[in-house]
Length: 330
Image (cartoon, rainbow, N blue to C red):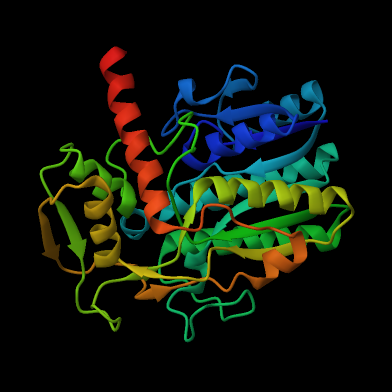
């Protein structure tokens, strides 16, 4: 049995590939390398450069490699960008996901794991937010992911096809062994940006919005270590293989930190006091989103091992140093 990982050359996808290989799985990566990197895919995994929306290509891969499950990461993830380019996001995140799901059904791939997002909740009335909360995304990014969740639910009712959709909260950190990490130029992830600033890769960083209804006026998020997230996918795959039903689960720690608290943690761990400017809110940003994570713990037996903000920051900083050396040598 082989696992097809779409977007496996990207940030989260490359961590997933490592976890699968460490678990003894056979892996094929499909990535167009628009934001991913060829070097991020280990030699033990087969890399195919192509588009997830190319149905003929996906069909060929499924048959050639006897694909038994698909883990789908490929997509666009920047909230403000989605506000400026909604049609691009509906094409990349929704239309291409539909094409992929169609091929899975047609070729008999019965297990599908989807990279969804907490953005489907929008501005939740209560926090921590549970999976049965109202779904009211405030950005095309969130809506594009919710539309794919709905397609998966409808497809699973109509066909012999089961899925798990994992609603990520804020993913951060890097592989503790230093094998991969967030490497995208001009990334917008807060901890990534703060680490780059601490190491002098940026002259300063911006805080977008200081007038939210939160304790210090800045957005509050639940930060999950990328390795714990990848292992949540492994747990979801095990659930499906055991005959488990289709499920939607949150992936977070049930603990929130504000933007200013994260910046303070990066300054403490790095020992650098860098410049921070304050700017207006960005469109599409919710004030506070923290996960209720009891469902994934109870259903899949998932237990995070890196639930510590300082540890997340240390791994992110270590990867930034490794990335600088890698670029200097290449």
